[in-house]
Image 1 (cartoon, rainbow, N blue to C red):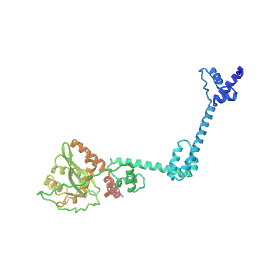
Image 2 (spheres, one colour):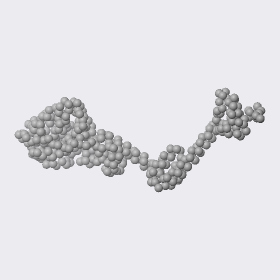
Image 3 (cartoon, one colour):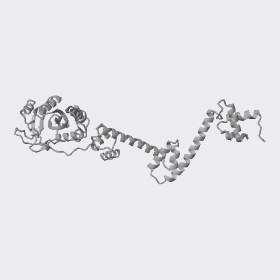
Image 4 (cartoon, rainbow, N blue to C red):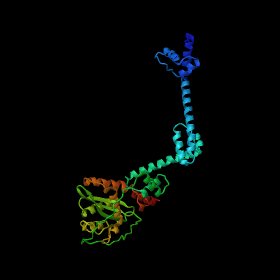
Amino acid sequence: MAKRFSPEFKQQAIDYALSNSHESVVAVAQKLGVGYSTLDKWIRETNPTGSSKRQLSLEQQRILELQKEVKQLREANGNLKKSACVLSDRSYQEKYTVIQDLAVNRVTISSVCKCLGVSTSGYYAWRKHQANTAQKYNDLKASYWLHHARLGAPSLVHDMHDLGYSMSERTVGRMLKKLGLRSRISRKYKHTTDSNHHFPTAPNLLERQFTVIQPNKVWTTDITYICTKQGWLYLCVMLDLFSRRIVGWQTSHRIDRQLVCDAFHYAMARQGYPTGVMVHSLAKQCFSGSQYCSRDFRTLLLTNNCIQSMSRRGKCWDNAVTESFFHTLKGHVVHGSLFTTRKEANTVLFDYIEIYYNRVRRHSANGWLSPEAFEHKYFKTLEG
C-alpha cells in the first residue's frame, strides 16, 4: 500500500531539505523515510524554476569546501607516503624538486619535508639558491647579448664580477655552454703587406715596445679594406698604445695619402693637438706603398712636432697592436656581413668604433677595462 503524507509533513520535509542543502537529496530522503523521487518532486514543485537544485548558504558552501580540502589532503597524504618510499634513496635535490611540485597543490611544506626526511630550512635554502642561479643565468645572457654575441668567457667573467657575482672564467664558460651560446669565431689572420716601393722610410723607434705609461705618447696606424657591393672601402685608424683607444679614423673609396692625412688630422683635433707624439706605421702598404712615406704625410708630422717611426721591411708584427684591432674588427662586424653600400659599412664602423670598442669592449692590456674607462681611471689617479 502506497504511503500517504500529510501536507504538514510534506512542508516540513521540504523545509528540512532546503535548510540542509549541503546534504544530497538522496541522503535527506533516507533520513525522512521518503523516496528520492518523491522528495525531489516536492522540492521542484515549490521552486519557481521547476528545479530541485537548492541554494547553499555561505556556511554550507564553506562546509563543502572544507570537506573537499580534507579529501584532497587525505589523497595528498597518501601520495606523500608513497613518495617517501620511492624517494628514500634519492638525492636531496630530487626530494626538494618533488616538494616544490607538491607545494603547488596547497600541501604544507613542513609536512612534506617531514615525510621525505629533509629539513624545512634546507628546502628554503635550496629554493633561494635556485632563484639566484636562474638570475645568474639571465644576467649572463643579458651581458652576452649586450656585446652582440661577440665575446666569450674571458671577457664576460669581468662583466659578471661587476654585477656582484664571484665566479671564475671556467664557470662562465660552462654556463655559456649550457645556454648554447658562443662568441663569434674570427678567421685565421693573413697579412697582405708588401715593401716594394722606393720612398724614403723612417727608422723603427718603437721596437715592439707596446706598453706605454701615458696617453698621447705613441700612436700606431695602419690601413685595412672592407668589401661592399659598391667596391672597396678603405679604413685608416690611429690607435693610442696607452689605452688601445682609437683616437682617429677615416674611410675612403681610395687608398691614397689623403686618407692617412685625414685620419691624422681627426686624431690631432680630437686629442687637443698634443706634441711629441710618436706615430708608428708600416713602411709600406700592398696597394700603393706610399701613404705613410709620402711627402704630404711626413710634412704633416713635422708641422705638428710629431715623430715618425716605421716597422722594418717585411715585419708586420712590428705593428701587431693595430693588426690585432683589425683582426677583432673584422671578426666582429665584417666577416659574415654583406654591405650594399659604402655608407652602410661606414655606419657599422662608426657604431663599432665609437659606441662599442672605445667605450664598452674590455681589453686585456687595460686590466679588462674599456679604453675609455682605463683613461678615466688614469686621470682620476692624477687628480689624487
